[in-house]
Image (cartoon, rainbow, N blue to C red; front, side, top):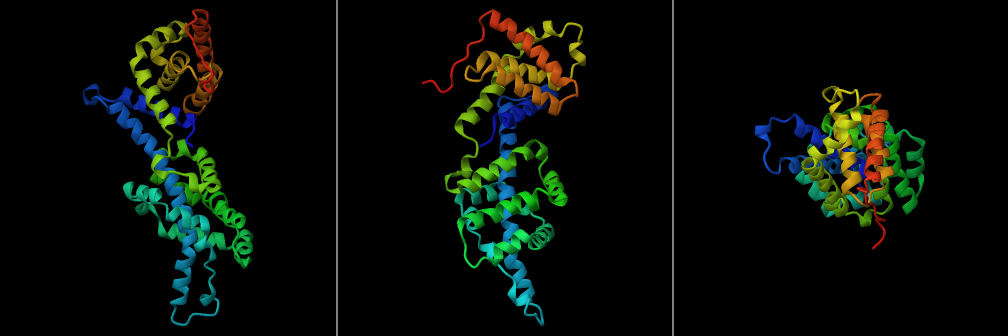
Length: 309
């Protein structure tokens, strides 16, 4: 589910946090604890997005009750369509035990802004897609999936107010936002296969922890390989994020045999462009490429086919 790119970002952020901490405050396990918090945040964002999607759909019942309870309700007030509130996918996610555990563990329900939910629901009801959905006399899996996908991609994702709400609620929302569409799509395709209590696979979790511990343990050696390649660059003036990304890249070259070197270089170029200076992508590319050539010449890089048993 969660991509290696996202994991690399979390490891980078953890390493950066460790570099900026007072050494006397760093205790055994601090780094792993920070990493786990950052990985948990990605899971929290995903869980809350599904919850928000479901709450917009559920508001149909709230709207029906409010309008029916008027002193003199009109025929229109008494005819609010609540079909979307009983959507099959909404029902499934809200009754998933793992999902409910996550909501309670991370206290995500309290993040909801009821007024924002109301506005998003009314925005939904004004669309032709919604009107076509409630006009269908029966339910079918395709239309049930289509309407919740529509709520996510056309109502939530395109609402400036909702995006601001996510930014206010989750410190690193920007790091996770791009991949959430993929995760939601994967869930809606096969909701019965999702385990909300293990949103990060054991393989990905092991990769995250191994990458973090390797960079921390091999930092001095990585710097021995990086510094000679800096030539006229002053290491103290190089962006700290660039240095961390290069250390991570070197570690992947040497200690992660199933990750192709080309994949490593491309990933860290992209991360440098996204999280450092405008020139960082080219800079990181040049340094890692030069280091890789030396490592290959010295037969220090051993890669294996990850699919080979």
